[in-house]
Structure formats: C-alpha cells, structure tokens
Length: 82
Figure 1 (cartoon, rainbow, N blue to C red):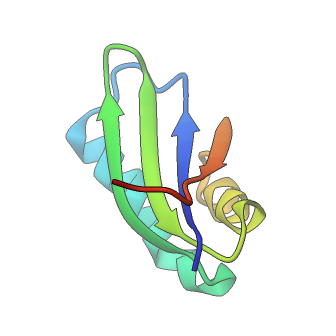
Figure 2: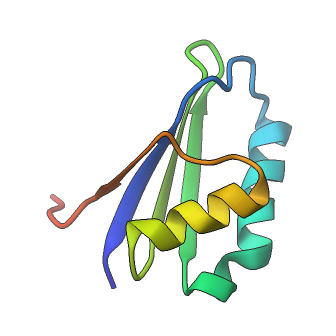
C-alpha cells in the first residue's frame, strides 16, 4: 500500500498532549477509509505537523484528517525511501 507524508501548518504551540489527541482522533476512524497512520511529529515553534501513513490514496488521508478536525495543507506520496 502506498505511503504518504502529510503536512499541517498553523499549529503553533502544539503540545505533546495536543499532538497525541489529534493523532488519536485520526486513529479512531482511520479504518473507515483504509488508512493506517504510523506516526506524527510536530514543531511547536513553527506550527508544522507531519504525519506518516499508509493509505489507498491521498484523498483517503485527507478525508480522515478533515473528519478528525485538522485537514492537511499538503499530502505527498513517498514512493522512495532510504
């Protein structure tokens, strides 16, 4: 299944607890779109949040994030890894 890295902006000041809450909101409904969120990272100073997932499509990832209340600003398929 393809992997995706998505980017959220505007989350300045996000705390570890806030990131976990958002991630858990995704996990709670991810199966409805066949998405598997693997990990999330955040930089509270810049407000950038990054999420890695496996999913059938970028649109499926976006639908989960939208329903969880935090749509992604960009979603990139990552077909090559080292």
